[in-house]
Each structure stands twice: as C-alpha cells, then as structure tokens.
Length: 145
Image (cartoon, rainbow, N blue to C red):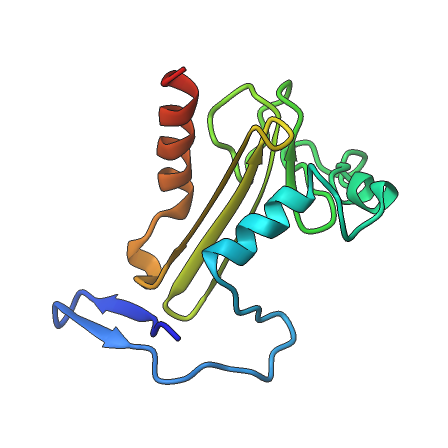
C-alpha cells in the first residue's frame, strides 16, 4: 500500500499520513487499473444494468442547480453546458469522478462514451491539482488526433 503525504510550507517538509481511517464508510481503496475497469463499465456494462448506468449518468440536479451536473457518483457533462464541478474545458461529452482523503487524490474520466478512459492516483496531498492535470491530459489526447 502506498503512503500519503502532505507538504508543510512552514517547515518545507513532507509529512507522512500517520493513519488510514477505516471507520468512515466513504473510503475506497483502489488501484489505477481497478478505476479503469470501473470507468469502462460506464460505457461497456458487464456488471450493471443499462438502466443503472443511465441513472448514474443522468443529471439529477438539473431542476435545483444550474452550475453543477451530477448523476449518481459522477459529474456529467453533455458537451453543451459549461458546468463548474469537474469541468475539463472541452465541449466533448464525458463523465468524471474525483476523490481525496488525507494525503491522496484520484481522478477517473470517461470521455465520449469510452473513447478515452483516464485514471490516475496521487499520494502528494494538496500538492496535486487533479483537475488541472486532468485538463492537460484531456487536451493532449483530443488535440493529438
């Protein structure tokens, strides 16, 4: 298991995460490969029903919030509106899910219904800007064609 770190500017040092909290129900431990499989499931279902996938990728906040598009666990971008959360700066359709906990960050993106699935994990705490990294990777992929 990889250890997480946070940078302390006052002392100019990296501090290792001293604990992993297994008591909080929202913690998930994963590998980049497992995240990739989950991202692929969103386009090529083998475990979940088509209806479940559809519900996960439907904006359930449409009637209550104009700046966030969120399904069940995924920020949903239809390529038409410029939502705030998880915005990768492209007009392509995609879904994304990020996460973080003490010393760790992650990102999973399914772009254009599985044309690209991007996943990465970091153990450098708040020194990783996962959204900016995701934007750069997405831009490189889309402009390299």
